[in-house]
Image (cartoon, rainbow, N blue to C red):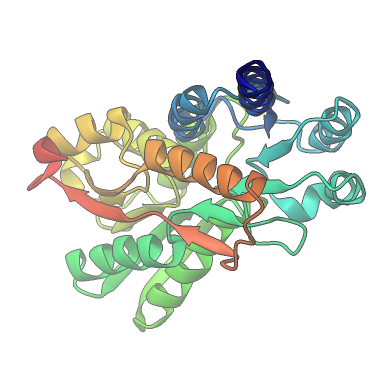
Length: 308
C-alpha cells in the first residue's frame, strides 16, 4: 500500500511539474511597427517584466514603420503556434492577419492599439481625456483666441482620437482658428519632420503673434515645433506648446520653462504590465468583457514636472 501511495505521489508530482513546464513555455508574440517611439519602448519594458515573472517566451517583432508587414508577421506567429499575440498598431489596417489568428483560435490583445471586434481587448490610456485636457489648457492659456497649429496622426486610432477631441475643443471657441493640421512623417519618431513642417508654417506666418499655440497629439511633434520656434528666434512671442506622453525630452523642455508648457504623463510601463495581465487572464480562460482597459494618466506642467 505504501509503495502504491508513493508511486501515486511521484506520478502526481510529475504531472504538476509537467503542467508548470507547459505554462512556463507559453509563447507570446508582440508585433509593432512603432518600436522607434519611446512610448512603445516603455510599453515593452512593462510587458516584458511582467512576462518574465510569468515565465513566458516573448518574441518582439518590429516592422520598422511598415504597417502592412504586420499582417504577415501575425500569420508567421500563427504558423509558429504561439499561445497569444499582442499588437501595437491600428487593428483595422491588419484585419486580414487578425482573421487568420481568429481562425486558429489564437487570442490577440491590443497594447495601445484600437478597439476592434477581432481583439480580446485593448489596453491604453484614455485618449479622449488626455486630448481634452491639453486642448483646454491651450484654450485657457491663450484666452480663447488666436491661431493654433495642430500636429496629428490619423492612421493610428489612439492618436487619431486625440485629434478629434482637440478639434472639438477648439471648435467651441469662435475666436480660435486652427490654421494648419499637420501629419508628420514618423519613420524617425517624428521630431525631424515636425521641425521642418513647423519651419514652413512659421515662414508662412512671419508676423509676431500670428501663431498663438501648437497642440501636438504626442511629444515628438511638440519637440520638433519647439526647435523650429527657437531656431527662428520666435521663442519670446509666447507661443504655447503642449504634447502628450511626457517623455524624458518633453519633461526637460517643460522644466526649462520655455514654450513647451504641458504634456500628459501616460503610464507606459503600466500599460505594458496591464496588457500582460490581460493576456494572462485570457490564457486562463477568462472572458474579458471590456473592449478597452484604461490606465490612468496625469497632466504635467512646470508646477509638478519634478514630482512626476
